[in-house]
Image (tube, rainbow, N blue to C red):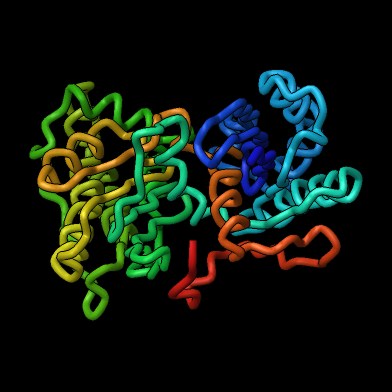
Length: 343
């Protein structure tokens, strides 16, 4: 099955062609980072306009790189329905609905956060979703952990305030660095001592599988306000200590989930933060008794190939229906009441 997908939930305009659920024929992403950097974060109105300007060019590039000579060769179309920025989502959805009607091809709409789980198998033929699986999605806007068994997914926990990636951006800003902060902190941490600062551990009463990053962020804010004339070495130590604390919390919650669900046979870590080098080292070493999977780094951040992969399985299983002639809901926030769903 050949799937063509669009992803436009936030600040990346992406298009991809995917064969058989994992073979990426092309994946093109137009990033808006340089535009948003000057504002210190994403400006929704500017993001929407940029999607509108970029979408035709991105689709053209993806089609050209895929070797697909005629869009009628496509079997299925897919697009993100949420969560994300309303204006950005509307542009992608409107474009794909028009294309689906023109081509008379089925169109399915998928959840952006849950699609990240599928990024682990892109261009990795050896990847197999060996169930039961613990899947962790760690990005700038979301930090969710799931248990997958018999194609049924159970949401175990989520962040109750700041997402992990969001805390990296905020600490980077406190240090005077630009957006996005994750790659900057990861790079500076390599020369630092992760034990230089003692940072608070987070345990959420009554919610052992949930995450919280606002306390770490606030601690860093007051600590940095008390410091003057920081050397390069000091900054590296600060970055390493913060990064270790943030990533260790991800590991701690994952370990609790594995104790609660001892039948789990593998751990899958996806989302933008999954590109972090310390995260990969920490999880590989900590859970070495299990198989730990990460996406290729180019597929950690938002992309349309993961949307296509989720759509491929969901449509074939009958869980996702053709919506080209229907009105569907676009949502800006993840539905945490959706505790169980099929993939």
